[in-house]
Length: 175
Length: 175
Image (cartoon, rainbow over all chains, first blue to last red; front, top):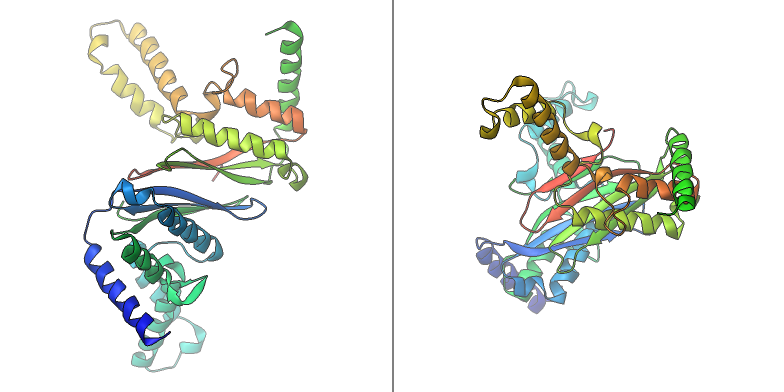
């Protein structure tokens, strides 16, 4: 990425951080049905005003997020805070018991376990995924590029994924 | 309804009952976003073969079911078996405590309570709703008319409803 673009991107992110505290109660529901209709995603994306919710760019963002979820079968939640308490502890215990770590010093095991759990966590989180259409950014940065573009706080509020014959996995923020 | 139509309808229903025991593992995901995109429904409808799942009539059925759910905000579940155990008991206790029933004989109270709980139950169930485009039948009969048309067992497997700023309500069968 060129220096100027990088500068603008960072400026956008800084501005997005400022807007992140503002209430986002408006928004839209968007869906994506994958070819063959065996997989469907429904997503709620929030913004601050109905004016922004009605803008075509906002719909375009919501559609892109829905497609992203369809492309990432490991994604179960929006961000780290949505992962159930206790998951890290449970996963760490399982990892620490792996065969390849037996006999290694405790401090080494601890570091390796932390790294593996962090990696498994990242695979679950929507906002941590590389954005499918431009892998130079993650989904969080992609969403924030719309915060800069539309001038409002924007949040992916929740999503649900349906597979034919499969179970549901859904994710909700602050519920 | 004319006698001949009524005869065919009953024949269709009887045939549908026979097919109801056959495994329905194929199907499609369909969605309906209401104008304004503040309300979205996602539904899974199952049939027996991918051949039927690909038929335009099957998609038309799934779309109609999704629209039906959008039109019925009280609907929380597909059928009575999906209502959590204990709901009837809890609801009966609440109803029995209503002011207008105090001082009435027990057997009368029991009948009135049962009637009210039954009514509240019915309002929650998708298959019990009058079909919005033809209220002479309920949704169950509407679905079964497609069983007759397509020659396979068909089941509404699950749905989820998203309202902007609202919670999720979702319904799943046999999970």
